Image (cartoon, helix red, strand yellow):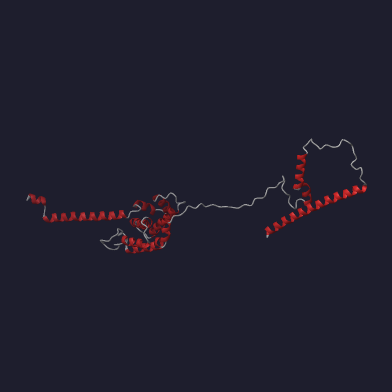
Length: 300
């Protein structure tokens, strides 16, 4: 009897064994669910909780920190990925998803993107993978469960609709982002500036309304190049202090010439000087006319 009392009634033992087996089954189910959740874990629940408390700018900053994006302003890939995850999280938040559902949805986004970037999956194959992952939603104890049983059927439909207008609609662009080599472009700017030609004289040419051309040509303009070259040649041939030998005899240079001869010579010299001055003036007037013509053409 003592042994029987110690062992207790058979019914109690059966109930105890039933409780133990039931608790073991519940523990196994919890472990399975935990493993499934861990398999879909992209952002931890504390991170999801921190994101849920932020506005859209705060979500962006937090995701930069969580995803270790350090070159967001210079890397096109990081900028696109950040926009992808920020947009997805904000949509899910507006759908009133729980923290667990938010974590699962972010894991879906990462899962599909990894299939594209790492496994080079086509759009059709990636859609099939999404179907396998979402299998069993709305069914109790489904053998084909993909670990997303915490979503309802309506939520699953909403997720599929969102993916259609986000990742799937721009799938080719994401493929180009990850799989097409791009050369680093150096952005520059080239400006062509027209510089004013330097003047050959110390002072710049005066304005037309400031001084007359006669005054300018007489006192400011440079002499013709022929005259400058002639003076330089004379200086080279006759350095200072060395003058050509002159006759020591005082001879009247005008001896042997009549008044008519002198007038004739002076007339020739005068005509030559006036002719050269007239030619020079005509050339300068022509140059000035051409300059005015160019200015008028520019104004047109």
